Image 1 (cartoon, rainbow, N blue to C red):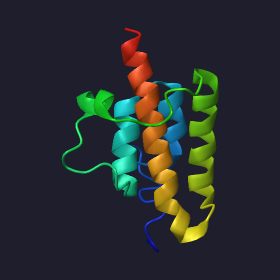
Image 2 (cartoon, rainbow, N blue to C red; image 1 turned 120 degrees about the vertical axis):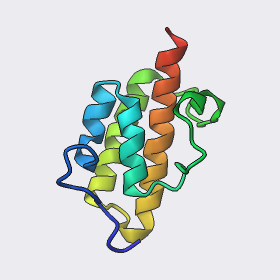
Image 3 (cartoon, rainbow, N blue to C red; image 1 turned 45 degrees about the vertical axis):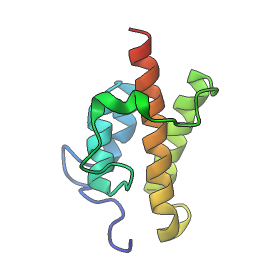
Length: 110
């Protein structure tokens, strides 16, 4: 994983610095693109944006406010590289599940 942390940091489309803005703006499609470009192992070629309702996140019982806060904290921990190289993939996976849950809730309420 060394050398793969914070890919595309200066890119206007794929910078991990945009993840929090994606959460705030409810732009989950872009959040998934950024996570993919950062190397999130849970997003592969078989990942379909419209199929996230099939993913069990384990976060179903967490209230909306806490879930959003968890996502911001996970993004901060990823950016700060908390846990070193070993923690990078775990942070990306955590963010992925949090974004999936946020997206699923929003679309369930439509």
